[in-house]
Image 1 (cartoon, rainbow, N blue to C red):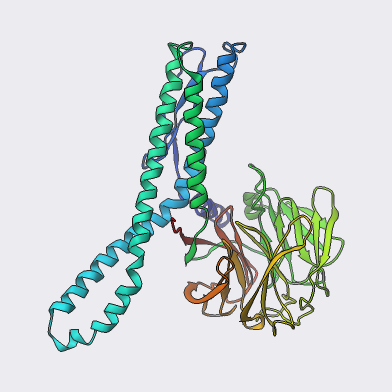
Image 2 (image 1 turned 120 degrees about the horizontal axis):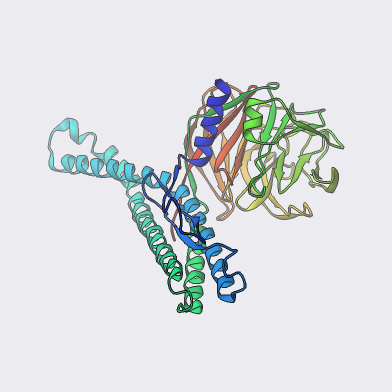
Length: 453
């Protein structure tokens, strides 16, 4: 029962509670079929396409064009679902913030109009809090505009679908060029909108969901953010040194409920818990060295290795918890990263973006944060987030943006349920943090502010 509950929790986390219900004709007319027909419980992102089966008029060139258009509409419907899932949670957060802002503003006006001494003493603190929250109003308005844009996409997809459906009665009278142009325009606008919403600033971390309890106190586990559709394999690495075996589970369900796995033997033992699986290969720090290795699972061969010049290793510049965690590899929406420290930067964190094919450094940033004082770190949308510790009360308190080459101190609580974090990595596909917490494999959901420019 516990494993089934864990599996349900992870589905709820990764799918963000989206429930799809099939609608449309239960028995289409002979020769016709429903290509795509779905809506969630709140009626968002509906796309219904009814069209001839591929066996009907298969030699008609216009039918071939129709099928191509149908595929585009279907793909766009799926994209709108993804876009909607990514924004609805944050939009709800902003709407709650709007209510809080209005309430605070009313209290602020009461203070301005009041003369009681006990209220007057609170005037400065409330005013300062109001000034901090006031910029959020602009973000909220931008989010509302974007929600309107998603609804417009939904309406346009419905219009295109209606045109396609009319072919049932008048297959030869439709202007294919006009229809194709409208589909392409909608696709371009949707892609542009999704690019704008792809990244944001971290504002919250959910309570942890325990997926499994296994292994030693230290380790790492992950999924591949660039895995093809249908590939939900889980990768599992127990320990932080002197180990070469990586477990492969076929799915999250198998990882939770079964002990069946495939074991891969690496050519060298790894160091630390900063490994990452990316586009079918595992990247890891070779034990007692500053060498990074890319190992291809499909060929079971090293496809690339390169030294990370000047990087400390062998517990020279580890995270606060130790464990040979000198070099931490991670991925985000922008690609592959390495977090480490050098003597040249006085033991402070250096952040480098790596070419995933050659392992060459594309660009590096030097920070003012001591590596040994960091509990753990992860990347989201080009920003490095650092925790203040690894045991007890934990929070994300330091953020370095590679976009602006600036840092700030923040305060985002992180529930450290099992009191010892030895791995914390972000997966941009799942929009979740994967953690190894004292022999427990844990997931956290994240909340991002999408700043619409």
